[in-house]
Image (tube, rainbow, N blue to C red; front, side):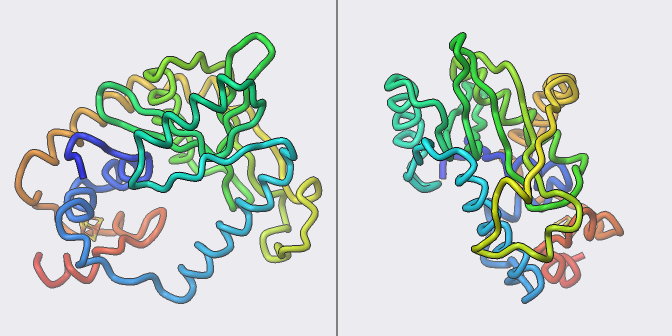
Length: 228
Ligand code: SF4
């Protein structure tokens, strides 16, 4: 992979721990496979993503996978040129080397766009705002005018009831977090520059600590325990 390209999830990983990002990019085989519980969370997240798309019946999907960023960017542009209102997995990158795949890109009447990020949780976590700030930065860098950034997440008490038969209108809620997200873009740019720097150097030394489990367990914990 091009060392100057960092995805949104890698940014969030690197913000939590620069060593985790470095290991992910250079020693990915050392990751511990997800536990059954974590795998269930991933699977549920995929199901929530599929249900979310049903809320936008005219939506079209950018089908290229993560190995085809340039093609995904071009497909996104093509859908936008065709006037599609909702584009799933829309992709953009900025000249600084960060790329984003937003769950839903919504085109407004005035030619501006909204970024809608889907989360399979019943509350908003702080790092979701960094996630959206990184995405807004990437889309603005690609030339899109971003009007709103919105989190689409689960209503209280629905997580455990999710199934293929769930009715999307009954399980999702939306929150406009535009102001909070735009306030973070400068910090995201600063952190982004630091992370690019990390990738040009050798394996960072970072001591294992409580933060390794927050807000989720790092998948390099076993590696770090054996090498610290
Ligand atoms: S286990 Fe902790 S120190 Fe090691 S890479 Fe993960 S977050 Fe960083």
